[in-house]
Image (tube, rainbow over all chains, first blue to last red; front, side):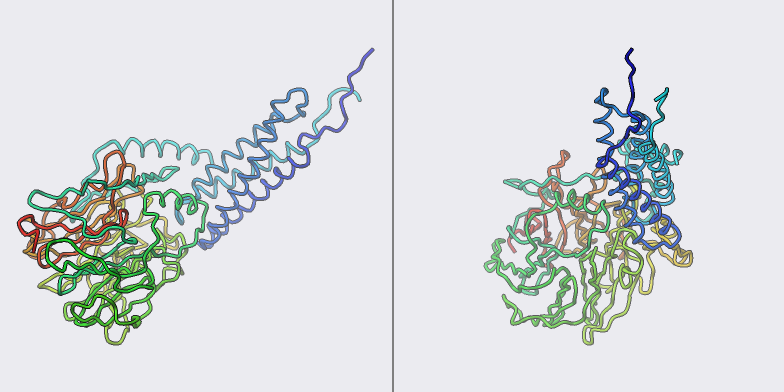
Amino acid sequence: MNQIAEPRYVLTVRPLHALFLGGAFALFLGAVLADTAYATSFDIQWNNFASWLLVGGLVFGGIALIFAIIDLFRPRQRARGIVPYAAVLLVAWLAGFFSALIHARDAWASMPTGLLLSGGTVVLACIATWLGFRTPHIRGSV
Amino acid sequence: MYRHLLAAVPLSAVVAVCNGQAVPSQVGPEPELPKPERGLLPDMVIAEPAEWGSKVPTVPDGYTITAIATDLKIPRQTLILPNGDILVAEGRGGNAAKLKPKDVIAGIIKARGTSPVKGGNRLTLLRDSDGDGTYDASTFAEGLNAPYGLALVGSNLYVANQDALVRFDYQPGQTKASGPPETVTPLPSEINHHWTKALAASADGQYLYVGIGSNSNITERGMTVEADRARIWRINARTGEHKAYATGLRNPTALAIQPDTGQLWAVANERDELGPNLVPDYLTAVQEGAFYGWPYSYWGQNVDERVRPQDPKKVAAAIKPDYSLGSHVAALGVDFSTDAMGGKFSNGVFVGEHGSWNRSDPAGYKVVFIPFRDGRPAGPPVDFVAGFRDNDGTTRGRPVGVTVDPRGALIVADDLSNTIWRITPTDKQQH
């Protein structure tokens, strides 16, 4: 009798992919912190920082997203948990993109929408990172 | 978060719908001011440069236009010397760092609508030695730093570089500066987001007025870099000391003294990114000591929410300019007409409008005439020189400085085709 034994540990994201995923989260986190600093101090430099950190998050997140999409198109090797992970990462990236557009507005015109969008982006990026790094639950006996 | 995200999408749709509708009445002393609006992406329609070829700008019946100098290096403002020679200030200034990703992208897009030629940093002298309407060009002075404003007081030729007001000795008929200029006073030049330094001399020649633009659109480079910006200085010509003559003018790009009264007038460019019909650029008699709103408010007490911290006291103190030229027309030149211009163009001001870049339905790209009565604007602007831009976006020229030759000619600097245009009443084309 044949029995299919799934590997015990399946990585949803591999190391290079993981680098960009983790980087995106850190950069988006920096953006929301910079936004908060601007919103409380009116010091414009924080607004500039937030704008660039968002661009960095979008670049890193975008590369992670490409890894995820490639995985989605390889059903035989598709890692478990890739679908919810990719979906949340996509939403996080879109929120970050809208935030970047809002941040292109001059001075206080980017507030408070920019802060709210950056906050939403980092929460979603955090969820995506957790989904990406958790060890998928393996059904059945090993 | 999603409420904001979704709210942003219909906003850009509204912008698109509005653009097809008639523009609210935007010229004159009481312009209609719609609510501020800004979609997710700013509207940008950039001029598509093209050669003039055999074409010339259009002028009213009874007037003739000729190109009296071509292949200049970014001509901006001109000065008519007593003997009829014309001085042209050529240059391109500014040293503003790109602070945001948006600055990088917008810079690339906006550069497409301007001349690729390097600024000359020089003064060119144009002379029509035999009075036949053709001019020869020679270099009067070189090595200047983005010269813009020009004024002659007796034997003193004043040039407003982007970083200093300088003085040359000038004798009638001179074709070349006798030496390097002497600095009258340094001018605020850090960053120089709006770098042009407009210049006019008071009627008695005792004072020089210099227009100093803001260092940002609306404080997005921070408040500290706006010290000594967005104002008109009155400089003592003899000592070089200055005082802020009027403040809160975002970018006073051209100044002129009204004949008879000696009153200082200015055109100023107002803020962007509040929608296609905000905020109107304006023409105004400059009141000494007055505050014109920037950055806290526009057209009187209309608060600009983009500025933090706000300043209700400054908002309350802001006065309205006299006359709206329309939003985003980018007025860069102004001069008072004279009887020798003839007919209905003899009493009023000419205004050079460089043309918009952040409006889906472009505005400006022409020289208008605003008739005056009893020393005040009276009536809507009339096109005087047009045809710089076709409806399909093809743009052959962009007017900057306008100067009235008391012998009966209007001199227009065009910084896209690097041309000086001369418009004369046809019956006195050859003076």
